[in-house]
Length: 345
Image (tube, rainbow, N blue to C red; front, side):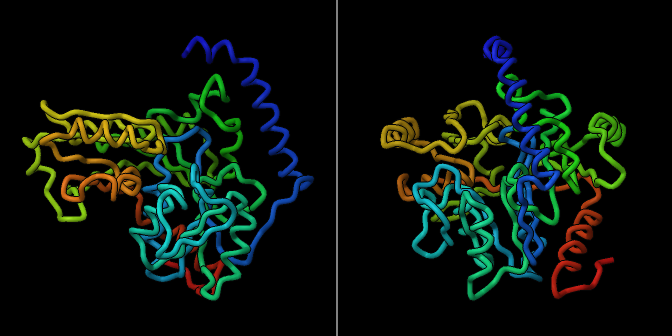
């Protein structure tokens, strides 16, 4: 695989050139970007996948939804539907995509929409009777047709964008110069004991400007697993035989958090569509075992695995430090962009 990526180096140069020309045309106004009279926060990355966008969107939902009508807008990756779709009681993971459906099931006080055309999706949201006061764009850093008011760029601790290269040789969707659009950069999936000295070393490597905020976060796993039938403490199931199922980009830490000697792991591709054969394989391997999966996979497996056997493990994004400053920055942006004009101190 590494050799193939090296062979494809000329295509990476070509891809980078095309992406660079596209960004140049948007930066100069030759290609039009649309703005809207509502605060829009775009969350995304330069690298392909696995940077923790979903827990970061959920962090923003928790932060904002107590004070504002919040809507999320995603493209709905691998969904069966097309065009604009606003989640309601008839929706499921197949129609919306796994991550939007996860937002819908967890946060009943927000609007969840999908549309590959973000401009149309925003227009449709603003035409609703209940208009959102804040829109969170999921995985939209490269979606230049809409100009968000605030950009959050994520980069995984183990795969910093400054150490990467353009697709297909590396994993960058655009060149490292794209970081200049970010208001805030968050280095995600950090070790919880990451020292201040190492944080400063990373800051120097990323070469951010003085106008950009830099934060470090990690993934916090819940102390409980959940099912349709009940809740169990993770520490209480350490000696219980388990089947661990994950269809996410980088499942190693999920497995490490739960796995003990007799546990079996099943690793699928990110956003995997579980076929009937997959379900049969899971059932065959889970004899006398409980099944624990990720939240994203749970919304695609629920109803296909016995409810008293299938559990999920929630995660949250938490900052190593500086969370109060981050929260204030977000609240001030939203507050000065809406009817709520006060600044948060």
